[in-house]
View (cartoon, rainbow, N blue to C red):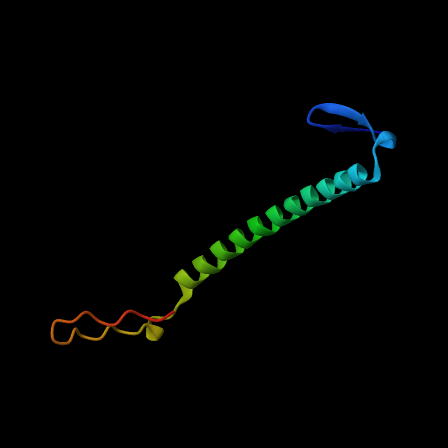
Length: 80
């Protein structure tokens, strides 16, 4: 079976075991990148969905009012 690397065809039966292993590794890792890309895209969609849900559904009663500025000092930054 011929494989193509950098635009050139090679007879796989004439490759040594190290080259064959490298071909397998590259092929496997390319598949993993495709899988991770799909997972990444799905995560972005879910983040957008849940962020939009929160924006539209957070109750006003849960809102914490800012404390008045004391002695001209800014209010403390929230800790996340």
